[in-house]
Image (tube, rainbow, N blue to C red):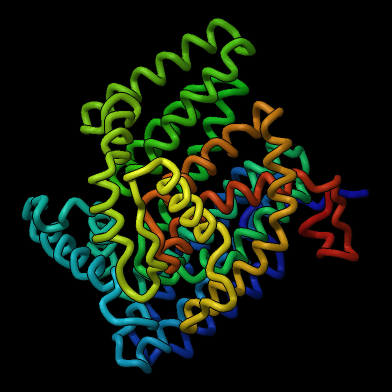
Length: 448
């Protein structure tokens, strides 16, 4: 069967139609200057992304571009809807379901950072309080102005980009373009991922970098390359600044995978990985985390720290379940941890629905229940497959860490996105061989 080649600049008529519809939206929003300017910026980001996809991945350019456009369009439409709801509720475009959300705090800091950068004033630590996402957002605002909606659409673009490493990782593990497309669609339609893509939150950037970094660990297990080593190194350092425990989980995953596979590696590959681990460990030590973050992990596991962090950062507000960690006896601790872990991967349950936000999370959880048998199958298969194993180790490590410090259902839906995507990829890899023809999906997009 003839394989269709991608256009050198644009993808196909469907891409034209989708971009044209978004451009028409700019015209309809012309009276709303802030929204029109933000959408023009988003269209520019999407257009550049499409051009890069087609140039870099010539054979699969159409498929990847369509998957990206689906994810991007969903997130842009979601951003419009939630922004409108927020305005109707008098919340000025910020988080629409409650007052005092983190997004407004991030926006205020970002505008302060942008103002200082424009005036050439040094950015001091007390300005951003050690939160580096507002610094990145502030740098973006230097270019486009302090436009709240532009920042939200930037996050929508970052969220849509996540389908690309999801596709590449799944195809690498399964050798199937069809399975890779299915995994990308799961990410594209992942409700929490779509929702959080419309808010000024760092979680989308953490998911994108984390998924890309674990892919490079898998590539390094197969064959060492300077590009993968550099990408992993940079990714972990950025994650140290954004969400430290994810960086530590990646570093420890690299170490564990190396120890598991050392007998299968060539001597040159062993030396290269040892050099990478030592360099990464040294830099993380300089950043105050200890070698590969081990010191940070040890401090994190101290009962006093966990109780304080859990009760002051996450076990607050209406989304908290109210599970208290009891360190007085090992069995009491294990019981509390088991409940926290159970709520992390299965909650909210239908009888716990208290708000619209929880109802959306419950609908997502029901879909997760349907996927669980495949997740368990994929996880069991991953134990015996060296290339699948890093994904399982990383996902379980993250879930254990989150269960230790959070029993907040609202926060959990954000924090579990990265491990859930990793486990979903293992689930898709466990599917029987797929051949998605024109009966199931458009042949131009999904033909093997």
